[in-house]
Image (spheres, helix red, strand yellow):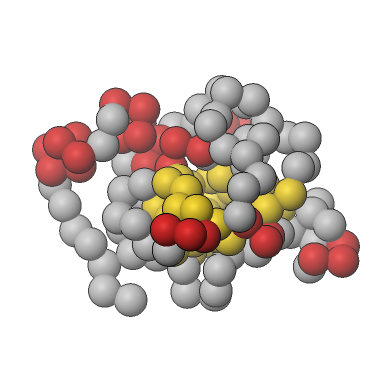
Length: 134
C-alpha cells in the first residue's frame, strides 16, 4: 500500500482540530461521546484522514467500552499494529496503514467466536459509508 505523506500544516487544513489531535497526535476522544459508539447501520468504516477502508459493520459489536469496537479489520493490510508503552501501560496501538493516522488500540478480550480481538477505535478517526453509497 502506498503511503500518504503530508506536512503537519497540510493535515491541519483537511482535518478538524479533534481529528488532528487523535489521528496525528495520538489523542483519544472521551468514552461514550463518539458518533459511532452505538452506531450499527450496515456499511463500511474508512479512515477520516485518507478514506482507506478499515472495518465493516459486520465486524462491529457493542463491547461496552465507550468506543466503537470491531472484531477484526477489513483485511490484514488495512491497519498496522505497534507496541505502545505510553501512559504507564503496555498496549497495541492501531494505525491506518495508508496515512499512519492513530485509530485506537486492539485488545485480546473480544468475542471468542470472532477471533478474540477488540479493536477499540476512536469515532473521530472514522468516516462511515452506508452500504447503499459504497
